Image (spheres, rainbow, N blue to C red):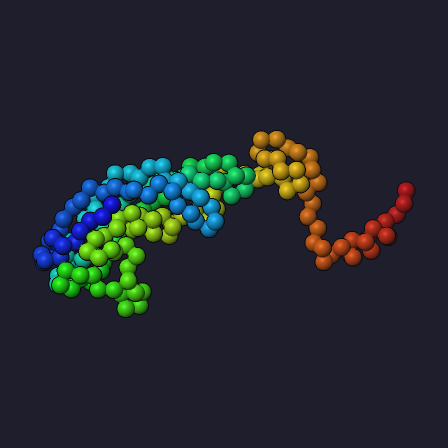
Length: 176
C-alpha cells in the first residue's frame, strides 16, 4: 500500500486518516521463509506537526506462519506492529535523515506502508519460534521428530577435545 504525502504536507497542524492494508504475503528472515497469514484492520494517521514534520502512526497485529526452530513443524504466531515515525518534510519532499540516510519506507512522495509493517515485524520477531515450550526437536541420529515418537537413539554428544580423557578413564575401569 502506498500513501501520497502531497496533500497533507502543504497543511500545518492537520491530520488525515487512511484505511490500511498490507500486500506482503511472504518474506525471508535469517535464512527461513515465513508467510503473513493475516493483518488486523488498522488505520494509518498522517499528521503535520508544526512546520515541516510529518508524523506517521498506526497499530495492528500480524499472524505469521513458519517452521519451528527445533522440529520444523509448521507454527502460527502473532507479532505486534506499532509504527510511530516522524520525518522531516521540506517543500513537499522528504528530507533524508543525516545519520541514517534515506528512509526505506519512502518512495518519492509516497509512504510505503508495507515496508513500515515489515520493518516492525522484523524488529518484534521472536528470538525462537517453537511449536510448544517443551519441543524436543529432531533426533540428530535418525532424524525422527521426538515430539511424535521416542526413537531410543544414543544422542550423547561428546566433545572431541575430551576423547583422550575418555580413553584414559575407560582403561582404568574395573573388570568384573
